[in-house]
Length: 441
Image 1 (tube, rainbow, N blue to C red):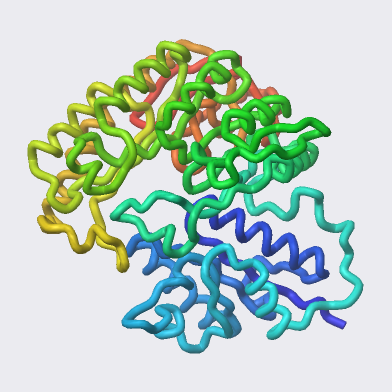
Image 2 (image 1 turned 120 degrees about the horizontal axis):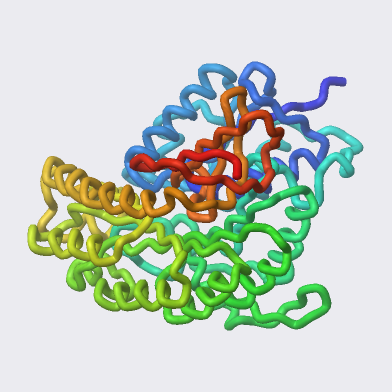
């Protein structure tokens, strides 16, 4: 009897990737096989993103491709929660899909798979590693510590799709992290919608980690993760005061000196319109304080240019913030209306060309800053985690580089043998706008 086989397409952010991993893990535990091609699958699950218009279009195209190539498609993820005039958007555009669910709906997805592709008997549980099936390379993995968000940013609809903050018990999170390290993971990337708020919803409830009572709180989680001996990288960290408690751990080398902090803007009025916490001046003070404690700290952030009502003076305030903050890695999006977002109703909607022009000016300023900060590493020796090895050398990342979103290090290897997942020391010989180049030390 042929083993029922499922294909999987995972789009969107690392949090969606973790959802995909959990679904695949359960399917493998139940005895389903997984296929990397449409033709090899009995049905296909598409995990979608529905945050911005470009992501919606990409997801709809992926669903269409899966339908054309396979014909039997189940859709899940954020786009599955989107509606158009009261009708489910996915079902409206692609009425031939077998089923549609919203985000973090693993049980629903599994039920639909069972309905349309009955699960086999006698699943081989020993084929599934303790930390589950991962879609990332073996040497790094995302660790999702919470679901949902308590903020109500006017440009965002994630809370309406994913709900309020729900933190995972710290004991459960640590067991997953420990299993990841046992499987050979060298870098753990902590993700959620708001990592700094971890545990707020459960009032920092005590849970057990290796027989010890530990609070479900970001600071405590970071301390526990630091014991595992892997790189620990923190993403989606809001600049709350208690983040200050984590920076000394970075200075001590216990976790990576890297913070992904989505500032979004600097001007108080714009931040208020966005319903974002903190303000630009306080953020500058906090950045200076963090760097005083940990000079090697890398700060990544994202911003929105052309938010409704943003004046030229407010945009210039943002550019001046960039020059003052000297952030290492930055992304900027031209404001894009999202169906259902409160910002759509704000006065002062700017023309597309103004939004895009401001985004381009923003990136021009930031690229010069990033290039200067990279150039300071020329002549230094950096620890690099190897991601790829080829005939002409290797590609890896320093502590300052998260996978896929930051830069890389191009390494001339010579005759030495290195493997993916190795840590190597690299003498940096040159830098360009985004990447470093060097040789094995």
